[in-house]
Figure 1 (cartoon, rainbow, N blue to C red):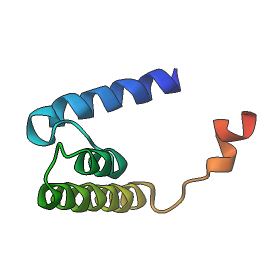
Figure 2: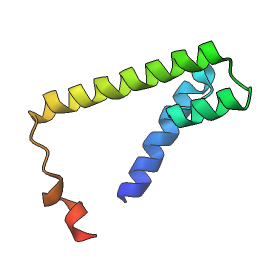
Figure 3: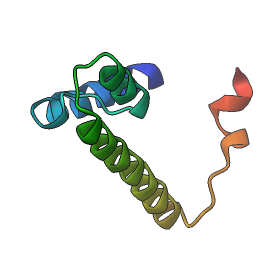
Figure 4: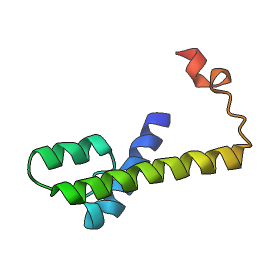
Amino acid sequence: MTALAHAFGLFLAIYTAANVSGGHLNPAVTLGLVVGGHVRVATGVFYCVAQLLGATAACLLLTLVTAGEVNLLGTAARRL
């Protein structure tokens, strides 16, 4: 069920960003499009910076919301 929720969230993010950035939310995808010539270098750099700033903001927000106490060993990660 967790994988399905993750896939649905990723689908919504790509669908939302499709008209703005082409839907690539990963710097590796952006780099591939730059190398392939589908995106200009300046645009690719802008997208990568925006993606990294978004990831940093998400990490800071998670730290703020959880008060820095996220115990990954006490969750499903141990049951693999």
